[in-house]
Amino acid sequence: MYYYLGKFDASKFAVPPGYEEHSQGYERLTLVDHSIGSVHTGVGICQLQPNGSVNSYVHAFEKGIYLLEGEMEVQRGREAFRLSADDYALLPYGIAHAYRNRSKRIVRWFEVQAPQPKPIGSWQDTFFIGNMDWPREVSSPDLGDPRTRLLGHFKEVKPLFPYGVGIQGLTVYRFMDREFGAQHFLLMRGELTVGGICGLHDHPIEESYFALEGEADMEIEGKSFHLQAGTVAWTGVGVSHAFFQRGNVPFRWLETQVPQFPVQNGFRNYALWDRLRGFYKD
Image (cartoon, rainbow, N blue to C red; front, side, top):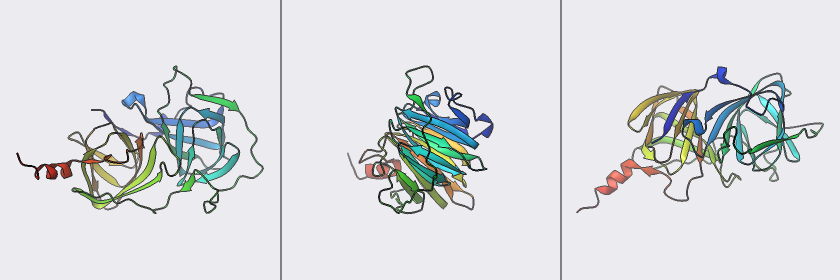
């Protein structure tokens, strides 16, 4: 069974291979990819310095971005918009996009890629197409306009309250899913209130977790790990895991699921199945 625990370390930021001639002030820190056992997921934190930019490029995979701090301008196809902290955007398969930071602050964002990008040296799944003309003015998107697509700002609305034996104080906010327009991944935020528990379970998909605030203990395959802001965890298919909130403030995190959940039976709750077993007699 494959799983991984790591820690965000800003000293590990680096210009990704192949971007040296096509970007300025851009760096990325990989959190999840093939090197830790994942076969579906690419996750990282990106940063762009003031006056930094990334030339227009295209991926043969889907990408979701969630701004953690600062603000930047994004060009996607024929549209351009400004994103700020807690804004998010979907960058679909084969759609040209570019970034620039005209503010005086560094900007950082969480990024999920699926299907997982190819390792360096294999088939090229990213290519640059040069600079595209930016409009004279770039503004924040009007999220109240029904014509605005594949963009959003995180709010604690439309929560899911998972139910079942061994689950309490857990809230999930799925904001980038198939209904939103993503086809290969789910991106969401989770919260465990003080005293919250999400008991042992597993999934037929990969999950990654990036802790935003608070603390929790995470049990993975019978081992306990402590999570706090900046911790990253990844669980492969069928890996048992559970969460137990610790401390005086809720535990909050960003979470990816790749591929997307099946329509049914994506959450295999061990305590519920143990209870069900008692109803069956030889």
